[in-house]
Image 1: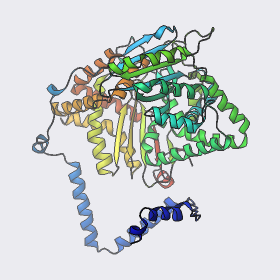
Image 2 (image 1 turned 90 degrees about the vertical axis):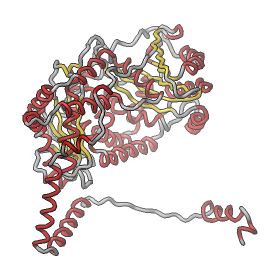
Image 3 (image 1 turned 120 degrees about the vertical axis):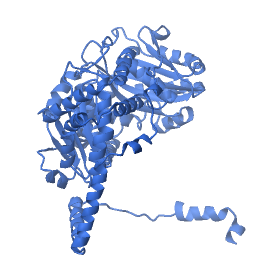
Image 4 (image 1 turned 90 degrees about the horizontal axis):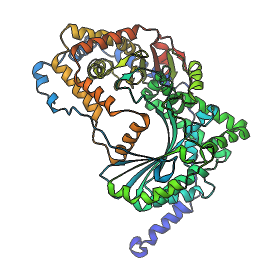
Length: 580
């Protein structure tokens, strides 16, 4: 009756009273427990002991018998009859040619002798253009390189000299489908090589990318926003700086607990390859340690820390034509429609008398590399590490160089690795030992190989499984378990991983652009594919021997992210890396 008499005023009065005019507040104070893991483990042991005490001896034996029966089922293979019932592809179903994307590269674009614009035609999003604007940041001083992820985040919340953040956000929402900012450390491969050769590659490009999409009619507005953020970004206040750093610390700490396997792989790979070291320095545990140091410095020595931020921003704010690269993706009509706007944007880029072109990073070392190698030796030496976190599960990784510098890494390695991942590792680490997942990979550019588990209740048993991987493959060959059919299945799995699903237009453009930017050739990719398709039984034996050699090598190492209790119980000699 009240609603009938008052109508919508009934709801507006409730909103006014209980939301807008309500001054009540609830304050919650959360205090983390440093003994949570130990307390939880103790309670579980007491509970299990009570349960065991309540059982008769015949009931205990019955449980053991069931466990043994389940274990025997897990260890036995499906019968041939069951295996033949599973639908499968044949080699004749596989396309022998890999998917390639055409890229039009415009040097001296639109009459500017220093400009480079690339274009990829990709259908599927009519009237939409995807634009990537990259700025070379190799001039950033090495002492400030670790600051770059923070700078990227800051630029997404800061004002510019011409607009407030509220205005930038409003215009971005009005004219674009979003603009993201990211760092890219792009390896520069030898364009003349037709094989993948293991090497610690010192050639790379470092770029800050603004990536966005918009309708073709809004291209000029989006490019104007990108230019404004690149040229005119302002540092934020001390309070805001500390807030951003605290948010990033919290984000990485949470991510380590939920995705520790990725951090374990980053940590291990950084010990062996200088380019992978940047991935750890910007996005791994090393970045978390840097952020905690930044938080202290921003609080105790703000003028100096503020000066560092300003120097980084200034280093790329000139927006010179030679330091900028533009990548466009869209259908033919969209690319034609944005041509005038892109031409205006290119003509607005700055020139200088002493500019000349950037160094050819395909031929010379990146200016950060020498200092990075020095820092690698000190901060991520080749050693076994334990990273304690508050968690009841572990992330257990082991890795090292499967191939040494100068060795060819052939596509024949893919099928044995696929066989290992989907067979032995899956059955041993996941099915039997109880991990939620297990992964393995080989970097075909430097020869680094790793195995890592996800949400694993074990530590020592998993390391043991890794160490026995080579022996397992050898035994499977000796026992005739690696048949023509199993090799074919592994090859098909490799090709599926290579091809994936059809890419959306934006990713088509980025993939073709990245391949060109890094110097990755279609010839090399096709040769790798041909070698995958030509894998033989003998290639499994070669791979098995390499795994066996790595497991015995002093240059192999592990990274375990787990609770203190699990790290201590493992009895592994681990150097402790604190992240709390």
